[in-house]
Amino acid sequence: MKPTAWSLADLEIIGYADDRDQTMLPAIVPPVFRSISNPDIVLVPPFAIRFDVVERATQLPFTEAESLRDRQELTFFPGSPLAAQPDHQLWLRRNGQIVYQPALEARRELDQLGKLATERAKAALAAGDMATAQDAASEAILSNDRCVTAFVIKAAIRCKLGKPAAANLMAELASHLLDANDFHTLVERYCSEMPSLSAPPGQNRPSASPMFRIATIPVVAELKYV
Image 1 (cartoon, rainbow, N blue to C red):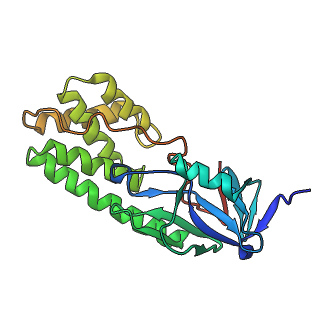
Image 2 (image 1 turned 135 degrees about the vertical axis):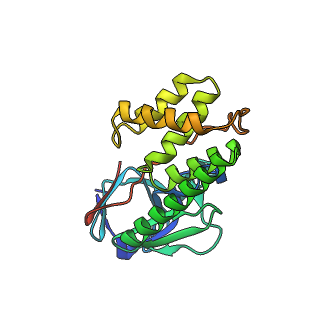
Image 3 (image 1 turned 30 degrees about the horizontal axis):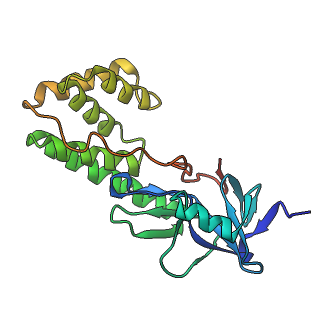
């Protein structure tokens, strides 16, 4: 019978279960593990990480993982694998740099990146640079999906462009952060302060892969990827 649990001590990380361009970064990405003792075995999501054990992983032969890589469903590291560590998070910076660090450190850095990107979005909006404001707001949300101001800025831009349905979608995405009425009040305030604008570029970007945002920063010792 194939094992259902794998010790992190016998695993290395050879890549991640996603394929992203810069417009979808920064991002937390789920690792792709490879067995050290049996290099033909690769583990991909969905799985759960409990302390120093990976459970319920999808197990593939390495050749099949290579096929998924060729179809851009997995991304392999260009360099050496990373040693798997308990309570760590794998993520990508805006420039594509791979980061693998303790989960709490990752959360702090991503939170800070979200704040900085939000400030850039606000400054760009005030300057009438709507394309930069939209890109910075998107970066803020990718860094930390609790950046409510970034959702508001994206909604305000969509309102100015005459896209109320798209603005309402931002309100829905932020509904776990702010009441809809309060959200729309903020949107109206930003709209009233915005100059006239034309459509920002990049409206028709490719959609994310099915693995998009499959992972989240853990807040407890048990990490789950589902």
